[in-house]
Image 1: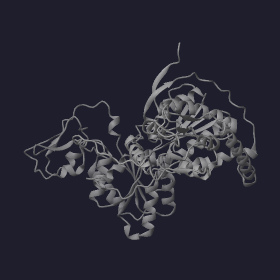
Image 2: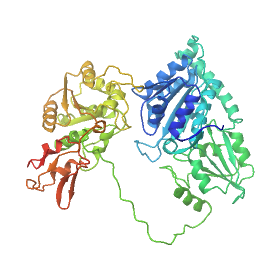
Image 3: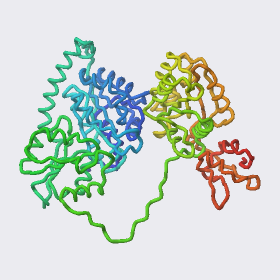
Image 4: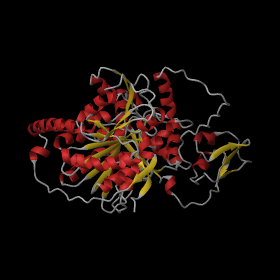
Length: 587
C-alpha cells in the first residue's frame, strides 16, 4: 500500500512535519499568516501546545523545554520575531538541548500586517540556518529536517513561510511520527548562563559552529537544479527560493533554475557550479535583495541582476514575472485584442455588523478626541465613516504613544485616549500601562475587551478562561491588572451602551490622573445561536437624516430611497436604536 496523501495548507503541513519529527512542546502567539500552525498541532495528544501572551514569552518557554531535552516548535508571524528578537539572538549563542525550530511567516503585500519586513536577515544576523520551502510538501519535509539540523549543529533553526505558502494547498505525502527520547538535562552554566565572561566563550563557539554550518551547506541536497528539456537560452540562469520558485517555473520554465531550499548559509559552491556556463544570473525573490546581494559578493565574473527588474514591494504573480521576463529579454509588451474585462467591485474591509468596537469609535469620533491606536479588528475604525484613529504602530504602542504625546503637549489634557484590545493588552499593553502610571500619565487608556483574540480567528488568551488545548483556567481580568498596576481610576462599561460610554469618557477625561476604562462586550461572531433580527426602521417616523449611516454598520442600508435594516446581517445589538434621535429605529 502506498503512502497516504492529503491536500494540506502550508501551515497544516508545517504542523504535520513537526509532529512527525517527534515534537513534544509547541508555543506561539497567534498572528496571520502563521496562526493555523499551532491550531493544527494542538490536535495531537502527543504534543503540549500553548498560546503564549506574546512571541518573546513563546520563545522563552520553548527555550526552557529545549534545555530540558525536548524537541520544540515555536511559531510567529514576521513582526512577532521583532518581539522575540531579544531571546532569539542570545539563543544562537547558547545553542539548544532538544531540537528547536522557529517558524516565521513573512507577509509580502501586507495582507494583514503593518509592514513588509524581510525576516531572512535575522538568520544572517544570528548566524543560524534558514530553510525556505516552496510548497506544502517541502513545508512538511523541511520542518521535519530542521529538527535534525538543530540537534546536529546545536543551534536554533529558522523556517520561513510566506502568506502564499501558509495559506495555499498542495498534495503532501504523510509519514509516521518518530518518537524522540528527551536528552537528559545536564547543568552547564557556561552554555546557558549568559554573563559576559561566558557569553564571550559562547560567541566564540557560535563562530566555530558557523564555520561548520558553512561547510555543511555546500553538501546539502536542499538545493536543486531544474533543467528544461529545451532551453530558451543556456547562457542565462535563474536563482530563486520559496514561493518565488513556483512563479519562476511557470514564467521562466525554459531556462535553467537553481532553487535554494537553504538560504543561510548560502551554498556558494552550488551557485558557482550553476554559474559556470552562464553569462547572466537572474535572482528572483520577493521583497529585499537578500540573495542578490550575497550572490553578487561571490565575485562570479558575470552579470547578476535582480531588483532592477523585480520590485522590492508586494507579492509576485505570473503577471509581475511576465513583465519582468519581457524586460529581461528586451521584448516589447503587446496588448492582446479583445473586450476589456470589467473590474471586480471593491470590497473594503469593515467591522462586522454588531461589532462592539463600532459604538466605541463612534463615540470617540463624536467627542473629537485624539486616539492612539493599536493592532486589532478595531484598526478598521480609521476608515470612513468612523475615521476615529490617529495612529497604529505595533502591538501595545498606542498606550505609550499617548504618554509621549501628553508629555510633549500638556494642552492635550482631557482630549487624549489610547485604545488597546484585550489580547493585545496581555501581549504588550501591561508594561506600557505600568509606564503610564509610573510616569504620571493623565490620559484615558481604553481597553476594548471582546473576550477573545478576534482578528486572527478567535484564539484563546489569558482573559478567556481556556487554553489552546481547551483546559479551563482562571480568567485574568484587565481591570484587576490595571488596579494592581497602580491605576486609581478604573471602571467597566458596556460597549453597547452609548450614553454610558460617553458619560464614562467625559468623566474620566476631566480627571487630572490616568484612568482606565474597560469597554466590554463579547465578539458578535461568538454568538452563534441567535434568532433573526426584528430591528427595523419605522418609515413614517424616519426623517431621512442619514445619521444612522454615519454609524457604519453594514446592516443599515439605504435602498430604494429608504433607510432599512437588513435582518440577515443585524445582530440585534440595539445601538442604532439608541443613536436615532427620532426613534425611527425600533426593536
